[in-house]
Amino acid sequence: SKDADAGTGEALAKEQKTVNRKSSGVGDVPSPIRSELDKLPLSAEAEALKVKLKNQQGVLRSLFFENVDLPDGRKKIRLNVTVGSSGGSAESADKILRLCYMKFMTGASKLEVEQYRASLYELVGSTAPPLPAEHGEKKQKTSGSEANKANKSRTLGATDELLERLKKEGRLQGALQMQGRDEKRKNASINGVYAEVSGGFNGKPAFEKTDGSATRFLFYSSKKGRWKINENLDDSAGGFAYAKDAGDSSPGPQLSWHVFDGSGKGYNEDSAVRCA
Image (cartoon, rainbow, N blue to C red; front, side, top):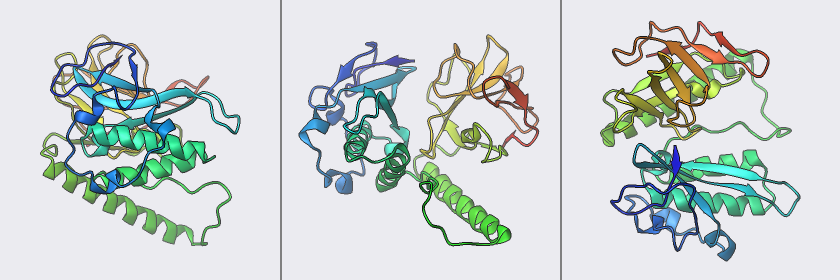
């Protein structure tokens, strides 16, 4: 993966380029749904924020800032916003990232900022699922069965909305769903609906998680002979999960997935995980 300058209709190639909003060229990229987002003002400090642009396979995938120190003493804060979750608009992704920076500067926690990012994704047409409430927040008590039913209903509703959006965008055909990883276990973020990435990866199909909750790519590693899930289209890193396969076709439900359980535990087979 490479960080690159954004330009309208141009290939993105320069590495590790940091830019501010006025000089990036991101603001020149048209967006189909921006009216509500445009109403939210940016501070001068947010306008001047140095943003990095991540280009993969010649396409701008995401924008992020890193190593930001906050007034409350927190150091080296990093946040990522994906173009796909921002209604497909680089300009919207840029605005969302800068708004999230402003949220951080008010003293908001990382979780609060991520919840705010999810609300901005929804504003421009994404269907990022709601994030868990802040620790200590009071919740209405429900029985285990009631909670399970409510969670299942919310999940199905969010998935239906997401599939409808992908259909409107012409990205539903060929989409896959990773499912089965227990939400309480490490790397449950591999769960979700993945749409095909234009151009694929190294001559094979590749897929990007589309709900906006986390940046995840599913692609085939010819070097390792396996399907991998990683935060970038990058075969040099181990990633979050893998399934050995000849790679002759897109991944299917027959594959056995090994998921990274953490340092010291390594990758272990999770028989509940399936690609449908």
